[in-house]
Structure formats: C-alpha cells, structure tokens
Amino acid sequence: MKILIVSIAGGLLCLDRVFIQTLISRPIVAAPIIGAILGDPYTGLIAGAFLELFWLDRLPIGCYLPPNDTVAAILIAGCAIESGLILGHLPQGLIALAMLIFIPFAYLAQPMDRWIIRENEKAANDAIKSVMSGLPPAIARKHLFAAVKTGLLSAGLILIALPLGIAVMTWGYPRLTPPIVRGLDLVYGLLPLIGTAVALNTIRLRGALPLFCAVFLLATVILHYIRS
Image 1 (cartoon, rainbow, N blue to C red):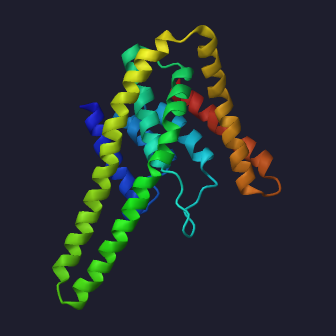
Image 2: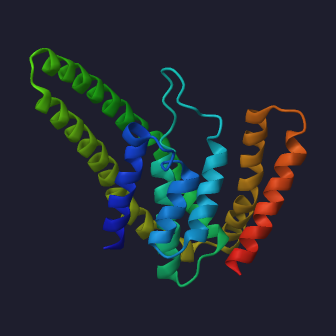
C-alpha cells in the first residue's frame, strides 16, 4: 500500500515537469514530500538536497531535455526509507547505496520524457484543428488525456522500480562486507562536496564560495537540531 501511495504521489509530482510547473517537481521539494508520506521527511530532504545540487546546472533551455531528477529523487527517498524500516535502521551507507542505484533512472526516464513531449505536440496540433472545426469540447478532452497519460507513465515507472530497489537493498545491504559498508559511508560524506562543486561551478560569482559555505553550514546545524 505504501508503494502504491508513493507511486500515485510521484505521478502527480511529475506532472509539474510538464503541466503545472510550480517547481514542486524539483528534488528538494519532491523528495521531502515523499519522505513525509513515509514518515521520514528528514531523509527525504537529505536525498533531495543532494540531487538538487547535482543537476543544478542542467536547465531545460531550448531543445535540451535534462535528466528526470524528479523520478530519481522519489525512488531514492522512498527506497532508502522503506529499506531502513525493513532492516530496522537507516545508516548513511544505505542512503548512498540508494543514490548509486537510482541516479541512473534519471537518464533512463529521459526517453519517456521525449515521447511525452512529442505526443503533447501532436495533441496541441489536434487541438488547433478542433478549434478550426468548431469543436471546443475536444480541446478539454485532449488536455485531460495528456495529463492522465503523463501521470500514469511516471507512476507506473515508480511502481515497478521502487519494490525492485527495496528488494535488492534489503537483501544485499546486510550481506555487504565491512570494507564496502565503510566505502558507502565515505560516498555519503563525499556527496555534499560533489554537489557543492557543481553548484559553485554553476554560480560563477565572486564571493560565492564563502557565502555558499556559510549557508551550507547553517543548514547543516539547523537540520541537526531538527533531527534531534
């Protein structure tokens, strides 16, 4: 039931990438929402913040279609939280493992996004023909069909990938050797540094480094007390 709820919520959040466009599909927003649904918004916020920094320089400008970071954020947050509940604890290495598994899904979902865009262009052309032929109700039906189709495709992808990821992580993580577990903990510690490097490369402003470090430190302290 949780996986079904997360899939439906994820499909609705992914609609924002095409239709609503109020930025609720950004990882920093979508992942905490999924975390709140599963009872752990803090882990969702951590996963969303990491992903937000990774793709800060990938903007949908012109014909460029960025990776589907919304799907990746939902899968990472949902899989890490649910796997932690099943295993009885949520170590940092488990979050890092979820990111290593599901970050490629952002690129795997790109062909789906391209297909949705092409189909929406066809629907827009059909809507123009409906206007010319004097059939306004057909325009509303095309809009509704396009929205439902987009949401169902995203929800279906999450519904398939999420239980598979949970099964892999809950089976595999307890069987990892101590050196690999320490390696995953190290990866978790390096994720903010990699994201910070991407963000600073994107900003390119004088004085950005001290400002960004100050904001990052303040956010870390606040999150520490919130979690406590």
